[in-house]
Image 1 (cartoon, one colour):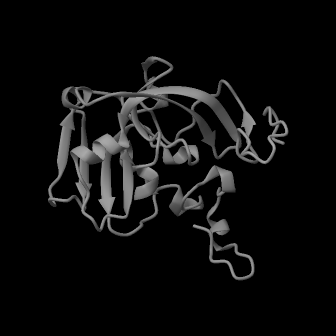
Image 2: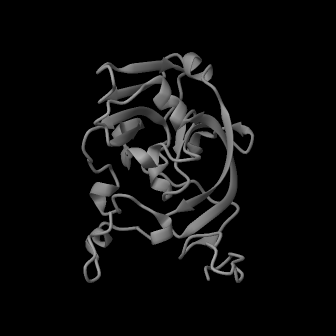
Image 3: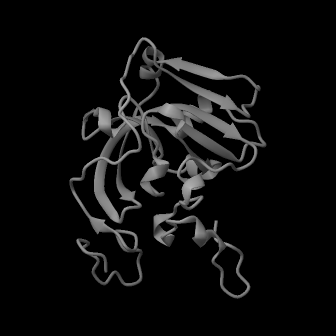
Length: 213
């Protein structure tokens, strides 16, 4: 049982928190590099790559603010072995973004791009999973700068480095390509329920089992 969890005998049901995680209700935001300044007149969000019509899509901040909003509550799992339960988010569902900017049938992955060229790769089915948001609000308030304002990705079923802060673009890809931390030793997928923390785990296998991805 992880420290800080309330995992009781669940009769075989999945525990509340992934293995190796301790519950924290407050934590200092973690990120690589400085916090970028938000300039609404210059900001935009783009969808590029293997789109259905081979074109690019772009929203200014005012245009993005008019997209449908959804409220969602989910747990946030950091690869640094802590989880924050029941985080309230508000934003645009990834499925709604994809409906507005459809990918080509052959698109299998996305790269979520933040400021300074930071990127995290995701399988398309992970990007379209339930609860994945392009979030503008947390705890009922606009995102704080160090939490990714004005826009961050929230992928609650994967480790937190996949939830890219300061999101600026989504690139549809027809093949996988590793992102920033994935190139530096983190796992290519990052499933917390399987403790997929590091890239060396991708080659671990048992008898008759393929590598874990």
